[in-house]
Length: 86
Image 1 (cartoon, one colour):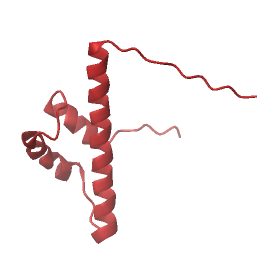
Image 2 (image 1 turned 135 degrees about the vertical axis):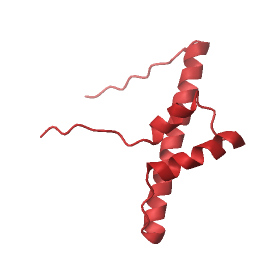
Image 3 (image 1 turned 135 degrees about the horizontal axis):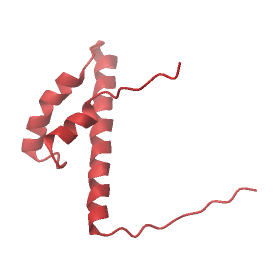
């Protein structure tokens, strides 16, 4: 028999701000991934990190991104260096 537990969070103000920033970073990552997939499906064009990083300045100027700093946005877009377990 399996049981499910739900835990209620009661974050303080600093934690709420952190969770909001984390949510925004997730949204940025998902939007970038969707842009890459749609570009590949539409015209077989590969969009890399530099193409998307060049768009960040305009996005921040329009107020679409409110992450802490610019390098945080760049880190979200930068491909991760995963170690192989081979």
